[in-house]
Image 1 (cartoon, one colour):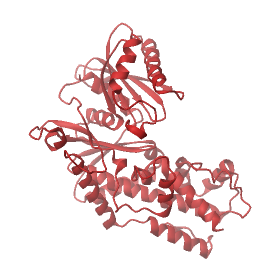
Image 2 (image 1 turned 180 degrees about the horizontal axis):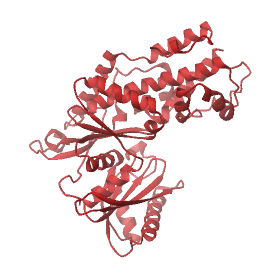
Image 3 (image 1 turned 135 degrees about the vertical axis):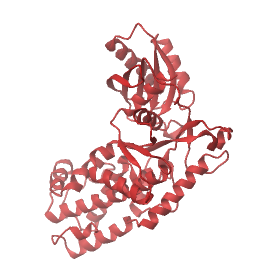
Image 4 (image 1 turned 120 degrees about the horizontal axis):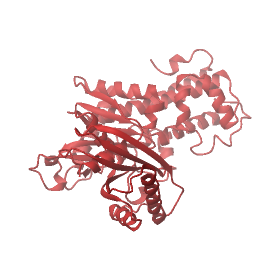
Length: 424
């Protein structure tokens, strides 16, 4: 059933025709999805080779799987927004988690050196609050974003991060032993595997899209250890994926062209929380220009502002067009008719449905041969229909494979960092 076919009779012929055209441009057939899965798998495999031109970074991370975590450890999760989450984990004698406590800090915008100092301030505050000054505890740090080059939005410097953190904590006389600095995707994978050994993949859908999985070291040719059967965690940076098979519409190209880094992380711009609202906003303003949406005298200032239509608006709108009126009136100063509300709902559903299908294709490519996948992220937390359709799409594309799906709570990356730290 198409989105447009569910709208009823409140829309004009012109509105229905235009929405049908848009829906067709965003549509994905099962054959197209299988093709996308095939291309993602090929890029994943290519990225493991020593010399390759894969769009995926496929960065290996050595995490301890054989050494069981014991005692007490700390994990520090640093998000792209600058939010810092510190978690203390106490392990029982059988390495299960006996107790956790967490504190969240909101970092002000700072220069690179100041941000490192701020992490030390947060850590000191946490240690004092928890009464941990008398023992030196292992600490794992996880970064929730790529930390290379132009994508280092926190200004951490990319190279030699572990050394910078180590020197900063040493200078502050903090009672910690820094064991590792890992990507957030890898840390979520570690947390999921600790709770359920069958998990082989962890994927997160937030402002960006990330995923990590366990691979046999012998398959990672770029490490030069082809005979090894040891397992290594691989951060795919799946958001970087690009192929001509991806269905880019004129609105996708516009969002990419006007983004901070055009031509990069193309797949992410079709699926991630950061971009879905902006794609929808561009559709809304185009229909306004075509006189198919809202009154001619409608206020255009706020809705014309880039990224003003948040992806968070889409979940309630997808559920019911009744939510459209309040959001458009309160956030954008635009009065709506019943037809306007149905059109906006249809646009949100069209964009969200394609994102769910692509997310499902991504997961199907990653979980081949794996027994379980762990999912997380704000996009899935608040968009139940998108989450369900993504999982259903994955299972449909895998056909005969039976894959379990687990959902991780926010903060799993800091937990994973602490688990990893305790294993050293």
